[in-house]
Image 1 (cartoon, rainbow, N blue to C red):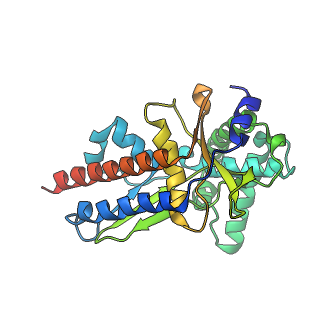
Image 2: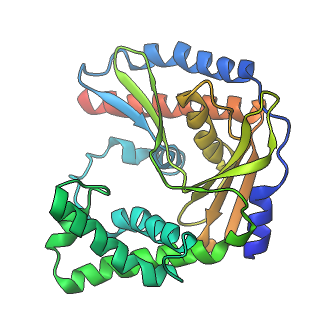
Image 3: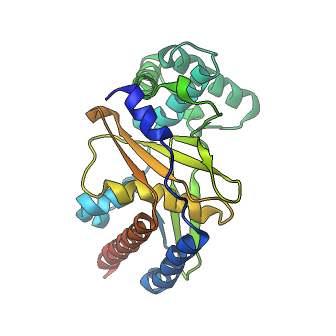
Length: 283
């Protein structure tokens, strides 16, 4: 995979934008189907649908019936946020490479937490308490992740500012039990073409492990769906590009009415599978 090729795919002129009516139809489909699906769940229960859950339901649905392991920090949970901050620092010309940036970025985050008590990344206390050798392992894993992303894209091609990471897109469905969709992309890129109302088109970029599998179109479409539901006043993203660095592959999907509808159907099926698994565990 060449950086120039991937960057060209991200920046390609978008298709005609999706109208607000298409978004409303998918939203109506979700808000109609979801409440009845979750009404028998325990009162305090909630369902949070993420891209990882969509993939799990498709490839290992039995995992939904296994008890969740208690959360514990590990390097894999740190590499994305730390790696993205390192990439951002390189884009700002504060460092020449992610490998050079990761250590100082981590040190600065820990120092700021010690000074103010504010956890920008949430992992600051965990890293601060690690033995230096263990801390080096965390930094090395983040540096590898960030270096792979850095070398996969031709950053000089972007004329407008990029959004690196940032808050997750979220949308909650009004129902007796909370159902929340949460989408997370690594980059948001402004495209040159504008919508009829003057709003700019955008492309989202997602980084994943492993290889692209069947259903990747609606998996990438999920990120556009959540971003569009989050704020009805914002245009639906024009494109989502998925990058699988381990496999040296990428996939790109232009968001059409058909993609958005198919993604909504997959989300409904995912919620149904989660509900069935949980009900079987309490039966």
